Image 1 (cartoon, rainbow, N blue to C red):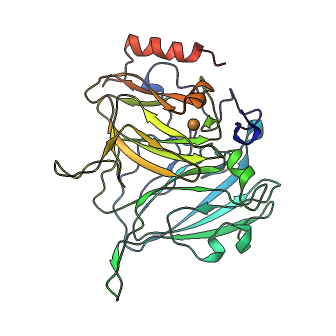
Image 2 (image 1 turned 90 degrees about the horizontal axis):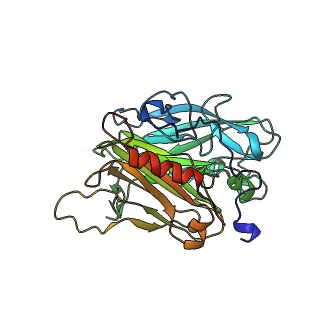
Image 3 (image 1 turned 120 degrees about the vertical axis):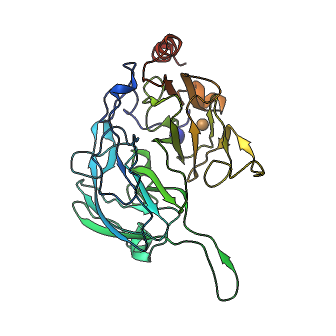
Length: 343
Ligand SMILES: [Cu+2]
């Protein structure tokens, strides 16, 4: 393993602001950090992964203001949070409807230069989050970043312009280098979802970031378990960071390789996949019905680059029974996951 693809030192085997989810029942699942659609910031919990999203209605050119906090975490990590003391890795999932604008005031509680840079949305140069555009927070400084979104439209010249909807992400772009290389490495990233009117909303959400040789800055067997009950609609947002190419694979579930991850009907020709490239800067998302056609179980989520999975890039999508109880075979698999060794 070369240094530039290694997980940050001291990050392995550390739980990050999150209680163990390996206790067996989904009833123990903590509510996650998520800024829901059209809602006030929810309490931030967990590792940046997400329980019940707020089912808000699409806004019309609404401006929403929120405050995020960049905070140092144990193990040399730095996370984003929606309230003081609640930073997580990954950071909270931010959700917008096309047409909404976010005015995000980032409070830098650290002694390092850092920023907030978004993919997929529109912003002016001073909300770029890059040192190139003098857009960053000095140590201790607060700064407001404005992200705009829009629906699809046609230009006067007749050219069709796509809307902002997509599974995007945000991250630091100023810590360590002008590219935020150190910030990303220490956990300053999260999911940004822009939805289109009519999009299907999930029951649960999880961010799965392949960062260096880690998943969410953790390696097996300490990658937090992604939990759901049989039949729930679960949304995954996959993000790639670092210097290595990765391939995201989820066992026993499939999705459509398009913007939403689901097909629009029986005639939709979109390719259905269960593995997708996940390279640095990439992001995609999809929804699955947990356990559909396969039942409850401990299903692997892992990088399919063999050496990467052997080095610990593997987690568990734990699908419990409908009532939240965990079948014996899934509990046994969890124990195997917890106990297995990596070279
Ligand atoms: Cu990989």
